[in-house]
Image: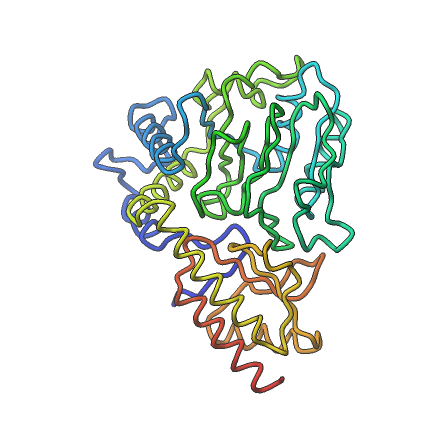
Length: 359
């Protein structure tokens, strides 16, 4: 029996995608090969790669002046690749610190440039997004970096920052493809695929073409966006199977009605859970209401001694991976695109039942 998997990532994959991948495992479209066995230069995989890229462009309405790269190393690698590719002749980059993943980005960027913390929510334990008017940007900065959804803290940008002529760079790992995005407002968007776009091993990078000439001369070829763009993301052998699965996820999203339709579902799912939290005297939601993530919902029991009992009861009811990140404790429900509303309903019902017993 399949469970309701609330893992923050690698995360739940749409069941139709898993079933199709299983059916095609040994023989993809009569080729006599699994996608795992194909040459990345062969016409079969080139077709898979091209369609995946075209479907991603359609989903996000990516303008023609942007390159789409299918890379590896996750957002952690991109934390280094961003300054490596954008610092150019500049010396300073601006970062907004909204939590654990912002901090990881900042730590990596400091190896390549001076980092200015333009704004931070550390003063309130990363429970909100700093208002744009409080940001102190550096004139002539190479770029402004944000993590637009913090998986651990459950803080999400519900707005797009205006940064003028300075390119806006966003780590969208945990909410990319969960809502429409105006790509033209960003210089670079990147994210790991293993939350809303498939499985671990693939990193999506969307970069404006005019930013491809800024890389440090020491940037390795495999980390050099321009070289990867010129080589169709194949400077090294790409993550072929992960690209194939992402392509199936893109097809599934288009079948659902695209990102406007999936956003409506995500709003409905997150409302179910936040309404439950707001009506409760047992549970506590730490994030400021206007900055709450639709994808990652952290919450705590006011009596932490009940944590283990809560997790045990959830598992008995077929709900797993609800334990919060070790750095913050408590609980966390990650409700990505592929989490059916039935899973969120089941969790909300269980939470109310648990509160009746222990509240």
